[in-house]
Length: 176
Image (cartoon, rainbow, N blue to C red):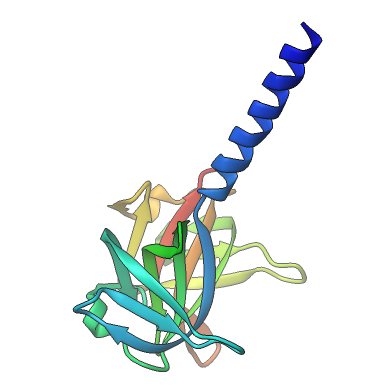
């Protein structure tokens, strides 16, 4: 009986490790090359460059707007969400940044009449003004400012204009 319980424990641990290994990972870097035909992106490495292959349903973003793989180019910064499948790094999402920046955090406040989202900061909070063409994504679907709530975890793609942070895209990654 004890041997069967130990055996089940080992199986449970191995299954847990397998589930963890197949979980999506995120990396960032500078794009070295983009090959639209082969659906590949190569990120520059310190020692060795890394090749990422796009899944058929992978999404590509550039500066907070939907894009095609061919819109990305060498020297763009990129955040890549991928899964390792054997020897291949399979991409679910690429967020390219050429003129914009990206940050993540927890929503402290949503000010609807001013069209602003405030993220909690370590020292002080940061306010992001929703740009004229700003998109909001909640649960993978296009939404509005009303879909963002205090306590939500978000990724904000923004552009700095003087003292103002102008949001181009806000994606809710986790509800409070």
